[in-house]
Image (cartoon, rainbow, N blue to C red; front, side, top):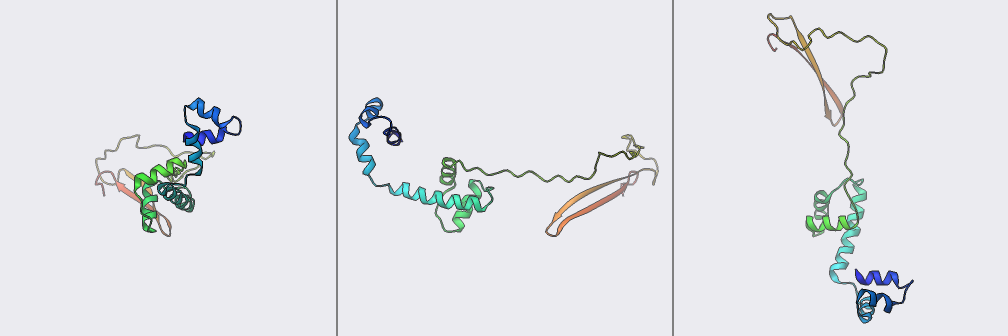
Length: 157
């Protein structure tokens, strides 16, 4: 990392001056420039390329756990910690999707609003006095299903 900094500053300042300021031997810098990339660095670079491709294919939604599972499924040996580290170095983060909330009413209207006859009093002394209802949405592969329920507050049936 220090040698990389020296390399970026070598255009503006002489290498010996930058090495002297950082208290680094210039011969170490020149040896670093011709030294081949380590096996681990080559492996990390190849892994980073695979992660970049898989991350884009996932529409930027995969974090390190799913990314690790995807890579292992493809036959790439890696651990979740290593994938998390490489993703962090590349600043790749899973995009969080917003949870779906169904919108059932349009409150921007001038129509009359039904009165609240129960006024939070859910006790009934005889059958068929008070009925309540609710609706829920169920996601399926074919689309949304709507389930409506009606209940007599006296018998709970």
